[in-house]
Amino acid sequence: MTVAFVTGATGFTGKALVADLRKRGITTIAHVRPDSRDLAKWRESFSALGAEVDTTPWDLTAMTATLQRLQVDLAFCCVGTTRSRMKAQGEAANSYEAVDFALPKLLADASAKAGTVTRVVYLSSLGAGPKAQGAYLQWRWKAEEAVRAAGVPWTIARPSIITGQRDEERPSEAFAGTALDGVLGVLGALGAKTLRDRYKSTTDARLAGALARLALDPAAANQVVLSENLS
Ligand SMILES: NC(=O)c1ccc[n+]([C@@H]2O[C@H](COP(=O)([O-])OP(=O)(O)OC[C@H]3O[C@@H](n4cnc5c(N)ncnc54)[C@H](OP(=O)(O)O)[C@@H]3O)[C@@H](O)[C@H]2O)c1
Image (cartoon, rainbow, N blue to C red):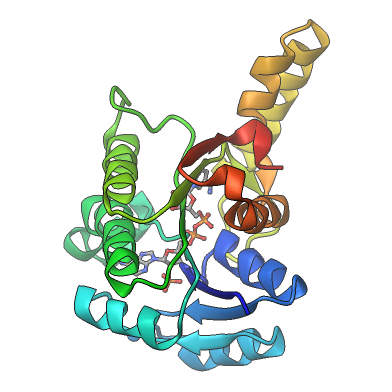
């Protein structure tokens, strides 16, 4: 029996990933932060998908014990903050360093210590790299490095823009996805197909399917997977 543990399960991609894993018949635990104001709602919606909810705090010892207790094979990290969250909920607890870097690192370290996890799948972003511009992509790169260094097989996914029907309004993201795909469509027609495939947007459902597939694929161990292979 394969057991998957999804952090960031309450997010756009995380929710789709829980649904996809359940459709594959995989035992799935949706991690929800213990202080979530919507815990009751999440319990109900994940239970409807046949997934359990876990509320282990983001603490290395506690997370290691949970992964061990649940005998987790596949640990997914789909967490991430935004500038609007930082403004609304406070910079200290919601900075890129505190969320986009520290939480994937903690999950990867806990996975290595637990000894049951065969793959950590980290949802990063296109553009992450040692010379990335901007705080977001720089912290994403540091998180990738931490995942690689943890000592457990990993897969890192770097999607371009993620589109689809969000509960939360993000008009700039939707506009960017449409505009980007329009420009890339023209480039593709002009022959720049590699460029088009590298940067084209994906949907939450397609990305979730790709993350689940990659987690189960031995050939995807210790690989960085770019947009063209995340649809
Ligand atoms: N959206 C895009 O176009 C895009 C493109 C490329 C890469 N990415 C990356 O892909 C990842 C997933 O994107 P998404 O759009 O699915 O994200 P999302 O909907 O914003 O979900 C973010 C998740 O992170 C959790 N989270 C945020 N702050 C937290 C904190 N302080 N402590 C614990 N959990 C916290 C949220 O939990 P709560 O619900 O409890 O707040 C939620 O589960 C992100 O990390 C993003 O950077 C996104």
